[in-house]
Image 1 (cartoon, rainbow, N blue to C red):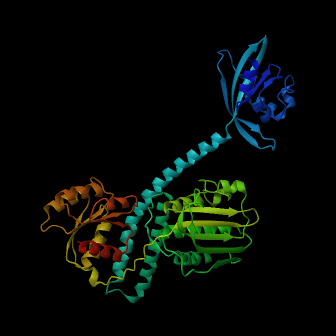
Image 2: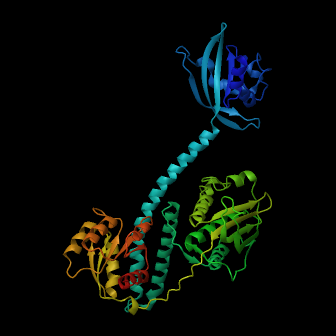
Image 3: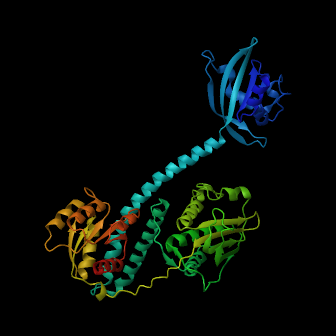
Amino acid sequence: MELHLETIINSLDDAIVSVDGGFNVAFLNEAAAKMFQCDARSAVGQPAFNFPALDHVLAQIKLQELDFSNNLPKAVRRIEGREPTGESVPLEASVTCATVEGRKLYTAVIRDISLQQRMERVVYESRKTQAIGALAGGIAHDFNNILTAIISHIDLCQHSPDLAPSLRDHLIYAQTSARRGAELVSKLQLFSRQAKPKFAPTNPSELIDQVVFMLRRSIDPRIRLNFTPQAKTWLVKADPKQIMETLVNLGLNARDAMPSGGALTLELSNVTITSAEAAPPRKAGEFVRISIIDTGIGMSPETLARLFEPYFSTKDKSRGPGLGLSIASSVVAEHGGWMEVESRVGDGSRFHVFLPRTLETQAQRPPSSMRETEGKERILVVDDEELVRIVTRAVLAYRGYQVVEAEDGEDAVEKYRKAAPAFDLVLMDMHMPRLNGHDALLRLREINPKLKAILLSGGLQERETSGELPGVLFLQKPFENQELVRTVRELLDHR
């Protein structure tokens, strides 16, 4: 029985050590012997101070200061152990005291909690990111309302026949800055994971041309940037903005891996993966492979294994929270693809982005003329932001539409019910007090099941709502005036 008990104790991952009142070792299991770098059998009877790692732990537990009168275990948390390399390790000890054959023995069960602490940090950072993401999403929504008004008002001014030529350049600069603000908001939404992809057939070669253009202005002149456009690359179904941001991020990581210069190469190729070659994350099928290749410092196998973990980074914490690659990986996965990485220390890195081929063709939309976007229909504009209502009304009235405003969902239902003649179209914001856009639209559909509507939002999570009902489109704020009037005209003309 004794032999079975010892076998069981030695099979435990937790270290178990017993010492007497004089701090002489009475027992060590194998996990304790490994933790304190000693032999379990020969250590018995020796003073604990003969083993520095054990002595270091016992000194922190302070056995003589513990009260064992109630015979309950005494948990001693967050003590510190030492690796053979001298590196500290967080430990947790639970101590009991017993008298055996007249000899008082203190027994400590010691657990390495480094993994537990890492998991606690991950959970904490995850919750913090969720909170920051929710804040970012709220800020993004409000800013999109503001930017909608700014961009649209500037556009109206630019088309005014009374505009002085000397002011035109100033308006162009102002509108460019507003659009840059919209791009920043888009990044906030991407960070908060509210940015749903706007999928469309995309030529990856044209996409990388833009990536190269941006990288040339962001990398050290000592880094040679190489890309040869491919004439026969397959199309992919992608959100160009999200994929472009992903590729730029990978390019900037490659830049950081070459502090003394080098070569950064972007390559495109069509690849077919057979069922025999498919192994997670690889999938069978036809894909476009985008490769970002650098001649930098490379990465160790340990770094490669953790590369896509949130908050893992080889850079200084001041350079960012370590979310770039995890976001990049999730964006590519959301597109139905995956990423692969090849790297060795001192031999550079190769990041490969695989995106599935699409057989759809790129839609070529001819520019709409002023006449094509004019109309005389009655439109109800519903938004709790007065500035958005004002500018939307101005843009549509300028093109001949009859526009009535409503300040929230309840107001919209009331005005729609009393309207004579009826409205031909409703433009409805999603976030409003009293009655939100989705619920107000359902109420309006009870009055007129065939009502046409355009849902507006400064957030992106509501995009899917537009697909639930026929005759309903979604328009993301901030929008260009031409995009607004074109969408209105198309929906009105759709039978």
